[in-house]
Length: 460
Length: 103
Image (cartoon, rainbow over all chains, first blue to last red):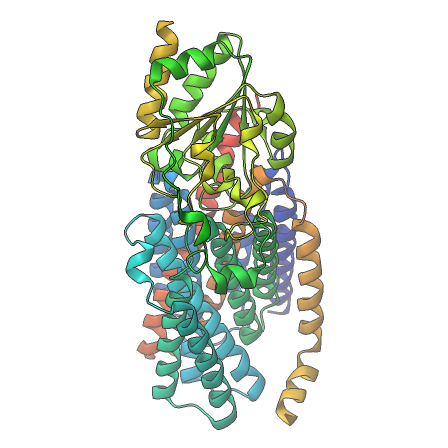
């Protein structure tokens, strides 16, 4: 028995090291896939260890465990295999939410069935709170990203104040439960409040802030798993959870920096509150263009830069864009892509989409490189991006996105904006770029427009 | 307060582990290129499914007639397993695309 204990402990140890090493390898393009396998291996080893650990006494109940594992694995595997690449942000969200739900359920059972000391109580309540917020928050993020729910449907008047009140209420409830004591009824009340807060806290956050909230919720799930690790005295869970918490926090901070806003500002401020002055178009007229004119412009230029945004994902236009790219390249046009850090709805969203369409990695320029290259670029084609190319961020202090680093596309010689209509972007701010003297609007669905362009270029 | 202090003394090693892992996590993950943000997030998300270990402990130590714990526990295992398997599989699919175009 002693030997078996040691073997189990060694398995946990190797599992935890695999997590660390796997995450490290995930940080470099060449080794990322191996890193993911290492982390998966570590998880498998950890699960095996907990199944065989002779120190856990009780009913065993392996049928209950096996049943849950098989059902969960099947669902997870099938969803992961069938999902469209364009649906990736909502997929990551929903998986994350399920992890949070798992943490909330465990701490609820723990609180209701175990006699906990003060430390255990605080940690269990904390895991319950964070897990529940991660669950409903991710669920709402999933519904929003999947287009099932719109911001206006879930945002109430004075929503930010409601959220602050809810947060204070939740903290007060937490303190009461620790200081005074808990009954089943009170615990259920706390669970409901936590779940409600998770929903309400994500409700007013939308658009360009989505990558921030998704990585934040990701770190929440990690933290709740780490807290659960403290409850069960599992170092393995602690290490795994904290690593996720740390990576989620780093991504959150990176996303905030990319928008030049503080996390507090993203969570509390919201785009919806401001943006008055910049919203007027002052009767200006945007110039529109046709497929044939744009095709000529593109084909006879020497360098073209595509600026993809969320619209590219919605229209699933990445493959069509790659086709146009190939065609232009074969006609001697140099084609690059400018990737803004918060383009799309999750960190690195555009990179994943373009990778799916086989766009080579060196063709993607980050914000700084793209801005350096833009003055010498002949034509910029904006595909479904809006706020990340808004000049108001540079020159209009009254705009709510003022100070956010953007792609200075107006420094190129010509700008073509592909857009469905003149409606303002997700942030609800009018974009002066559309009225810029260099800008021509190409209205229509992104995929349609790109395909029309491609066939016109072929006919030239 | 007394019991809280006691808790800290009892779990000192774990608190060390917690702090060092936070530092390690920040060190390992900072300076990841933009192109890998999504896979990193998705892979980390799968790792957060480590919560499933807790669910397995819960069920294993429960009495065989404690239906409350058993039912909630296996729901937790199912959800956790979706998170783990789905998360790693989706990450692998994404990274496969990155790999392909390198050649």
